[in-house]
Image (cartoon, rainbow over all chains, first blue to last red; front, top):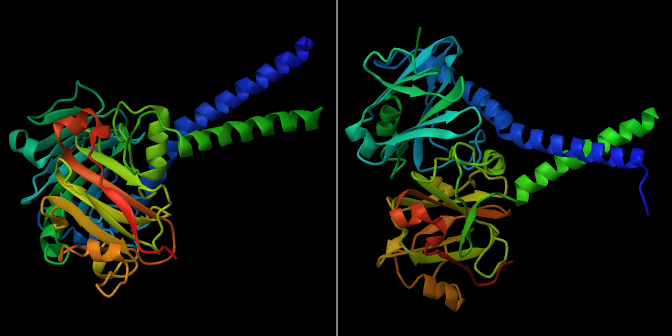
Length: 193
Length: 204
């Protein structure tokens, strides 16, 4: 049994097309999901505007803004597997028009961390409360190592767009509600340049 | 000819997308198993390959890397039966080696269940340990000593056994998070001494 060359070529082309579709789908899936999640999370920006009157809270702008979502409940439907034990604060960043300065120093008695995510979902940096005791979170996030650091720790992001996520561990939701709100607001993101 | 080309491209699209979905749904490059618990070891890590990255994006977006947090998921009990919110389970075992741990109950849609008083999880900060062991009960109702089941009575033998409510009628997903895990677990997540999940009484 021998296959005609034209038929064999057709099968090979079909298989190649399947492999390309497969690879593109797997590659694109996290990026698309991240893009949708970032746009849905960014939709919380009015929270910043309404709380911007509080001292020390950055005002939203086109480049980066902080959002302080309430503690997760059964009604939280933006991100799958939300942790009910963590208070979150987040900034979306876009470095295509300049770098972003990030500061976080929550006065918090338990675990907290600040994590940076690239647009393909990779967590490319995280610093927790213990590590921040040695190296505080005063970051300048940029696309190039050549960016002037202005005395800050220069962090190079693998993608222009991404997300900064502050987590604070909440042992008791009811008792710590006010303290959590204050700790969330210890995340500051400002676009520069 | 045009019809044939249409089917040629459509079938390639269907098989390409279908295989991508299947591998993301059922595959993964590096998973560790500890009892009923499975972990995507490289979740969130920059070392994650394309399949792990896709799996995590679908099932647990914005995970932290493994040196900061390990995530274990259980969808079945120790006997291999799928977990249901309508059933009661005892979860018990050694306290995990981590700075902080929590077990959270989710529905089949991967979102929190509408639990009373925001009781979504049991964690090391809020209790859940008795005599150096993790021990708590999940189920639609708080188990009582009136329950005839000997299993339930045994689970309640330690009076302060916490209850993790699982309201509704859906598949149940338990997620164990270990924040800042010990060095041995960071090297090998499969070394986790697993929390046992055993059904209490009859499952309707």
